[in-house]
Amino acid sequence: MPKQIYRFKYGIYGETRQILVYARGDGVYASNYTNKGTAFTEAERQQLGISGSLPPAVNSLAQQVQNAMSRLAGKYTDLERFLYLRGLFDRNVVLAHAVIASDIKRFMHVIYTPTVGLACQQYSSMFREANGLHFYPGNIDLAEEILHRYVHRDIRVAVVTDNQGILGIGDQGAGGIAICLGKLMLYTQGGGIAPWHCLPISLDVGTNNEALLNDEFYLGWRHRRLSGGEYLRFIQRFARAFRTVFPDALCQWEDFSKQNAFAIRDANLHSMISFNDDIQGTGAIALAAILTAMKIKKEKLSDQVFLVHGAGAGGVGIAEQLDMALVAEGLSEAEARARIFTMDSHGLVTSARPLEPYKEKFAKDPGRLPWYQDPDKDGNLAAVVKHAGITVLIGTSGQAGSFTCEVARAMAANTERPVILPLSNPTDKSEATPADLYAWTAGRALVATGSPFAPVMVAGREQRIGQCNNVFVFPGVGLGALASGAIEVLPSFFTAAAHAVAAAVSNEDSRAGILLPPVEELRDISAQVAMAVGTAACAAGVSRPCPFSRFQPDNEPDGLRKLVQGMRWQPEYLPLVPM
Image (tube, rainbow, N blue to C red):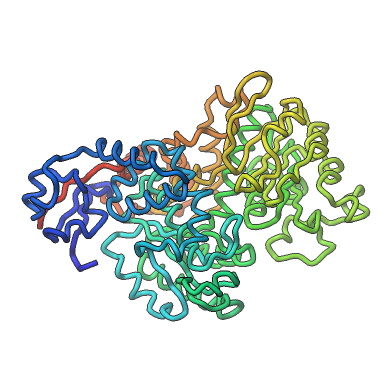
């Protein structure tokens, strides 16, 4: 893009008030931030030198949305709809986001899971427009220089992936950047982070996906993945460049393999404003569902015994969040961990076998489990549920159908209202369907899923299924961290986020056994999460005046609320000021 096509002019809260435009004629269309399509007013057409290049009619944004919806109605698959919306985004970000916001429930499946997985797999063949940044060994030493290109956009949030742990489909090489694009669209939809403040980044360290390596049209770095010291030096080189160029921006680590996710998160906890959504966002949304279940059961977390079936990044992230929540309820660290069991592909995680470091803290000492004598017989799912007295079962294993009738009935024998969360996605990898879980427990189970499921009939009434979707967490965490000027992202932010999401479940829904709010309320919930996170940052002493705002609040809660509301962007056309 040519230099100085546009510049943003901000208000007191750091919100964009105007776009100063230096281009004329066709140059105005060159940026998807300044292009309004048929919505340019007659005055703008004259001032910007585009009079005559558009038909005479001036359409409102609402009319443009209606037209786009009619185009979408002619698409037969969600992948076609994805391509249309991405193309629209590349031409006109306001219109693209206005279309998505008009029916967020419908378009969530298009711009993110499950459709984005197909976009990752077909990234090279579908490539249309450059979006974001691709770092690879050939340019990583120029990282600062490359990042500096985006300083004029006042980058506030970056989603960064090494493309290896794409949910359900694994290593997708350069195609993983599609996940970052989708996540950032949700930062905008939920948190109100303006699209120009968002930066998707792929750390292309190669791929071990043979199909990609053998594909002559593959666009990524055609080498096997870096590993060991080479890999770590690459990541450290990027992290150093990012915090140098964007010291106040939030960095979300996304879809790293479980082997690297914890190490990278922990290595950068205090040097960057960063977190890992697969670990911490997943932990927070699962905790939110469980907190709602506790309200329904009228019990405490410390009354429960938990089993996380699937000890990867998400599963251990959930265990970490439960651990913190139990300690906050008054249990000692040892007492909290005694109530959390984890399982992996080898069965119950115990200290009697070699383990990856991130699994060790929740490994059980077999000598302290009288019922655990034979790992093959006593370490399977049904046996652990029965003998450990599990009351809350969480699935992150990706093993479809692993929550069987036997398991569900064992849960129902342990507690009047068993909490069962089959969180693996996409849908065909869910550990059980809600309909089966309700049938097997005579409607007593409290269920939320990771994938979207249609409502089911329970006791003669239609029941909405709450979805444990991280989108309820990460946009609000990002907004709260930015508004509070947090200098790091603390684990307590995610506990605060979980409580905020649980509090957003209506009394009517909780009485019906629904554990999470509807996605249509995303924007309001993100604001509530942001307030909770910002308050937690202030309480922990890691806040400072917001670096993106001139507003200096006198009263902390009221000031934070004004800032959270004031800095959010909505998909509406901004005034374009010719320069």
